[in-house]
Image (cartoon, rainbow, N blue to C red; front, side, top):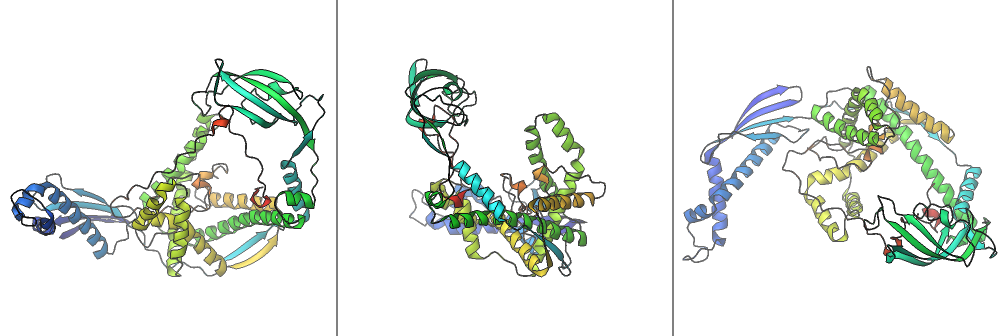
Length: 538
C-alpha cells in the first residue's frame, strides 16, 4: 500500500492511497482456499472442486468482498500509522476508472480532533446555591396531594350534578344507531368538568340526578385515535346510577395509610425528599454551568467544522420543530433565523466543551465500568419490544459506535462530578426563585460573552449552552441518537463519527400499545393520582 498526503490544513487531512492489484488478488486466493472445502459441485467429491472453478462460480462476489476488505484495512492502517484521531467518518472514494485486475486508487479525506494541551483543572471555584426545604413547603405539597386524592360521598337523590361532582353512570354508544365496540361501560365514575371525556359529553350531563336516563349526542374529534370513530357523530344512552359530592379529605394517619404508607410522618418524609431532589437538580445545573463557563473561558482551540455543523444541525432541527408549534410559526422561524449565528456559536461551544471534558476524563482515569455499562444497556433496551430487547443488547455489545453513544452521558456526568470534587466550593442558602434566576443569569452572561452574540431565547431549550459532548475524543465516536427532547437535558452526547462501516440497524422500538376497547368511546382518561405518594411528582 502506497500513501501520499495531499492535504494538511488545520484539522483537515487528505491522502491518496494505492492498493496493488497483487494484494487484492492474494486476498481473493486466500478466500478461495477457505471456502473451497465447503463448495459442492456435480461431478466432484466434496472439498475437491478445483480452485479455478470456485473462482469462476463466485468470482464477482469474492472480488467485491476482497476489495471492500482491502479498502477498510487500508483506512484502518492509515489511521493507525499516521496516528490520526478522526473527528468524523473518513470520506473514502475509489477512482472512477477502477476495474478488476488493476491497482485500486483511493482518495481519503477526513477531519481530525485537535491536539489539546493538558486542561487546567486547578483553581476552579464554584458556589453551590442551596435551597433548604421548609416545613411550610412540605405542608403545601401535602395539601396538594390531598386535593388530588379527592374522595366522594353519596349526594341526596334530588341533587343536580354540578361541576366538581362525580356521577356513576352506565352508557352505551352508538353510531348510525348501531352500538360500536368499546363504546359501552358500567359503573363508570366521571367527575363533571374534569375534561376526561370527549368534548360535549360531560357538559350535557351537568344537571342530571340519580336515577335519570338521558341520551346525548356528541361528535368525535377529527384527530381521535380510533380512526373508525374520528369525526363521526355518535349518541350515548346514559343511565345515572348515583350523584356524589366531594368529601373533605382529612390529612391524618388514616390518609397516609390509605396511600399504602405506615404513618403521616413517613409521608411527609417522602414529600420532603422529593422537594430536595428537585432543588438538588437545579443546584447541580447551576454549578455545572459555572464549571463549564470557567472551562470555556480558560481554553480555546480549533474544533472540527464537521462536528460543529452536525451539532448545529441538531440544534436547528429542534428549533424549527419548536417554532412550528408556535401560534405564529412564520414569526417564530424569522426570530430564530435572525439569531442563526448565535446558535452556531453555541454549537461550537458545545463541541469544544465536549472535547475538553473528554480530555480531562481520560487524563484522570474517569471511566464507565462494565457493570454501569450493562445497566445503561438494559435501561435503554426497555424502550424496545420484549422480543427485540436481547437483539438490542447484542447490537450495543458488538458495535463500538452504539456503545459509545450510550456511554457518553454517564461519562460526562462522572467527569463533572470529578471536577466538582477538585473545585473549591462555597455554599449559600437561597430561595428556589433566586436559584432559578441565577441559572438564567449565568446563561445570559455566557451568551453575552460571545463576540457579537445576542442572548438566545431561553424558551428554546434546544440551544441550552450547557449541553456538551463528553466522551469519545480518545477514539472515533458514535453518531448522535435521534433526540427525544434530548436537547433539553444538561448532557448531549455528540461525538464524532467512527472511521468504520455504518453501524447495523438497531431493533425497531416497540409500537404504542393499542387503546383498550372500553376506552374507544372517549379519549384515554387522565391517569388517576398514584396511590403511592412516593411516585407522585411535583
